[in-house]
Length: 408
Image (cartoon, rainbow, N blue to C red):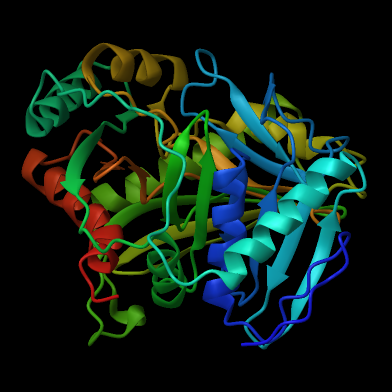
């Protein structure tokens, strides 16, 4: 295909297949050792690709109101590991209606910008080859306890009134097929899970993570704040109407605890004016969950910094840690026996056209050279049955495994 060359300050990708354009930009960033993020918001067609021309920043906590435009990537345990920020120096959106928009091409670091665009063009003009990505060695830690024993230990702690709820997690290491192509699988995830936040984050400091999470942590859109309580899980039966879904008392109580956790966060900051919707059953790929939405008008409540304040209060939510937060975190650190790393942390774009969308990093995996580490957890309450919680984690693994095992 003939393609006229763009000026050094721009990049014309019209006429190319989106998968090839995305792969070319992705590979250029990898070759230059630059951090990048790719994402697609729930219920949208537009895919975003953002690259920083400088090393990823370590930040104490995101200040959502004053932050530069960029993408945040935070670990589960923000007290012991840094939260990372990818500044938006290069940002393209692909809406798959053959429209490509430049959102940012940084005017700073002119020589590096020119070098990057030149590398993108070089990648575009090359033939297809095996895609590479940032790899950060992650120790494959075997948990001391079998997962069912860990669940039983959690139930015992709840019955002893040490906890109200805990969310133990487990990991699974799988081999990647020799023909594994990250961008192809990413696009398949976008097609399969239209109501998920589907992302790739790749940087030298963290390696590469792929995920399709159903859980919004918070959204700030101009003066509107939103968060959700998402919990309770069962397998989706595609032949059964969603209105016929029946939930057990255990699942209803588990979701109610997450809603209560959010309301308690509001109480801590004396916020009483919020709208609560739900709970209702929602589809998350091969699974069903219960979801309650909470909305606040920050202008009417005179609380412009609500996003930043609530981010610090919410994470980690009771949907990924438990209640009370301190006791459940202590239980996880003492007994879980795996390194969650960025699983159950949070990620998402900040100040993207005055909108911030941050999601809990669930249904995710870390890519290694020829393997991948998948993560999943299950909410444990007094009524939990260890075998059922184990089966729930297997269902959650299948969100990604169904795509990884499908034909390219």
